[in-house]
Length: 148
Image (tube, rainbow, N blue to C red; front, side, top):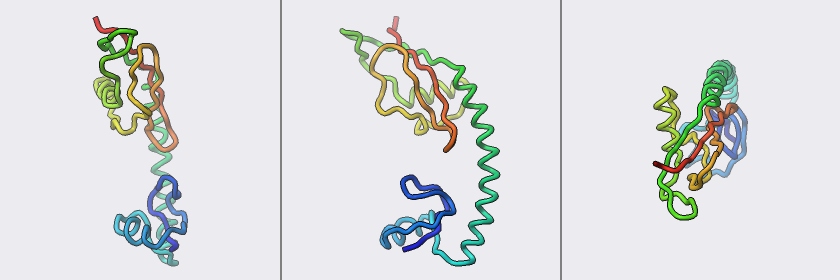
């Protein structure tokens, strides 16, 4: 089944691309959610028009997020945590902790945009990646220290 994507879909394609998907996936997932539409001449023309407006908006957003990434790069998050034997943390530093820290600094970032493979459970300095925009990532310096 050929469809035109109305949004970027990870591992499938970008907005405005024509993709070939299984009929069930297209009929039961992509079409009902408005993520794709059937390939017709009128739909192609409409998508091209939307794509130009979307690209202009994304370029403006990218500039804003690049300046935000610079602000985040200047920050340093010091996270004091209780430590047990062998300097292992009793808890961990999670993406929610990073999101709360950024919010306390006046930066609104959803915790799902904080890219931690797993929570930080070791003392020391770590770098945390934050996806602000599809093309803009920020790096926050995280220092986990002993509490007290």
